[in-house]
Length: 164
Length: 269
Image (cartoon, rainbow over all chains, first blue to last red):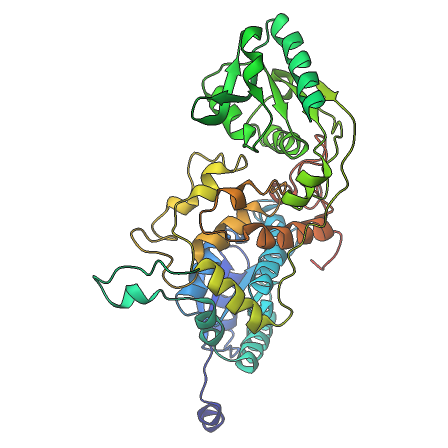
């Protein structure tokens, strides 16, 4: 395993937003049951997947995430009745935004894991990590999207006025 | 155009005679701006050009509780009023709309898909003049290749001077608390360092609201084709949720509703 990683040389960093009532408990259960799940996952516990705003997802990418995983309750099981319904609609639109600006939308995924589905948590996270490993570092894409104005690097020099 | 302007002035005089103040554009010595007409003697100063976000001016009337009022609005502005009403910013009963169809030349300038008037279920709506406009194609084609798209947007967003003009001009941007002012998301004192959070956040917030009036692009001093991004998301909302912003007063905004109230048409869940 370790040797294989060394050859590929890239360990994805995944930010996973986990719902307090289902997927976070599912992750907990995976740990209790000693089901191996990838260590690339950086869990962020939220009270509801509906809390995960577009700003939070963009912020994760901005701060170096290679992929963002949102794990919600199954539809119909939401602790707040319909919180995950909003997520189910928001994430596809967010993926479209990433696509429109040229970032691979596969870097953002929504899935559903209940508190009892420890095995499913391990499967979903493993699959996602493998997918991101295939895609490579997000920074390669993000860096292209960022146009650092030259005057940022040199304090004191005035911004160029010529052209657009 | 002159006959249309005359017809609008006549309809406006009728509203004023009934004691309803009228919000429209007026010729000032320095240019054209919004004005609340109360006296029909001033109606000679009434203008319908250039384009101006009347909905934004109406919001200040709403906040000042200076209602009811009549409004001269273009079709895109009527759609904005519909969206504002659905989001509790204005009561339809408080606003009487005088609307008219844009002409084909204007539709070309605005890349407008729907320059003609429709009733949209607004309770008090008067249509002035005739339908004359040919719809124009909306889309600015984005590059096919993702890497090309990244470079395209990098060049566009690099021009941004963060004047917030696109937000300030937008009638859909009525939130008292704006995420774009949160220093956690959009850093202050810097021109878009790193990921262009400002534009991506705004694009997400516009996804089920934007009525494609192109006022943000007109206001942008850097000529960023903002609505190319908003259009892409608007189409996604259309195909995913069957929702077209401003199309109907009865259809509620889908992103704040459950799947039972506003189901998804495609995709799995």
